[in-house]
Length: 290
Image (tube, rainbow, N blue to C red):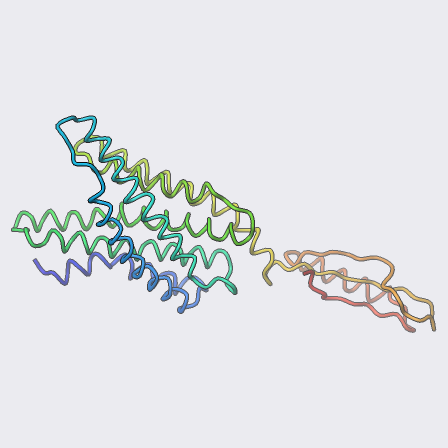
């Protein structure tokens, strides 16, 4: 088994997604690199706390119910709360002062995928020591399975965490975004811990987090971008004064025209220029509404 090939498979989704975001979106290369850097840094405290809290959980006994309860508590603490809260903390460090919402969302997705890729590599290195020919085949199967399941969960949950951070900064807090991230991650890891038919419920958790990520993204996709230059509002002021009168106020009418309708803006400019007084009247156009 080629260890370098296996590690390359762990990071293949990250490499392809990074290249796709850079080629097909207008996100700055620096923002994408910073997202990956913070994802790598987030692995350290997450791993330390998961290792530390593992000693605080009570030992399992012969009761099947207690074992299931212990497993659920472990998944909630380790995978749900610790991972998603630290994702949120480190995603908040990504510079977003001069970035649009959709670009920040893309950075959040890349952050989650990078963290998932590093987690896959950790699983691979932990299992490679005891791998024989049959074990090597199982490890490859695990890596391929994680590409389309665990990596996707990390990516979508990080997207929800990013949406929560953006909502907090715009003072329209979407608390359900981070709660759904914790719930989906917990549900996925809990059901995937079982053997047999119970593992299929993990797919339901994947579909759930994808749908919720899309729903919560659409809540903010148009709101914040309306403040950018793409959706600026233009105010056309028409001033009518008598010749020789001292100008003290802007009078007459104000027509508000959305930038999304450029034809209407052109017509309004032509109309205002025709109606303006040739003596001392002026028409003020193109003033952005702030």
